[in-house]
Length: 147
Image (cartoon, rainbow, N blue to C red; front, side, top):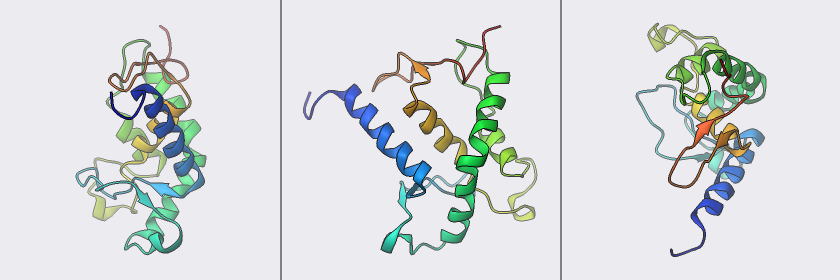
């Protein structure tokens, strides 16, 4: 194992990334779920000279305003310990005021990857049991509910 403990590295990555997302310094942004961002985007200083920077900045408002709603929607539809809910992208689109069933050109521009950013914040919060560098573990409340 070169470079240290993988699980500690994962925890450090999640803490760093989540804090950057929450602060508005780091984003994983694309207006389409069919176009995966190449990587994380630093959206401060000279790095903020991006084509989509206005939309990226507008979408950051949903990090704080929509996170609680996202977690409540996810928990209401996800039984513990079943795992992942396939509707996470839809939840994030609905929180941003759009309907994924309608063509994107007929709706306001959103961050189609907002759900992924929310998930990373939840990972950093420790809301997955037995998460390791090689396993996502299983969600626990508040990401799910017990029947």
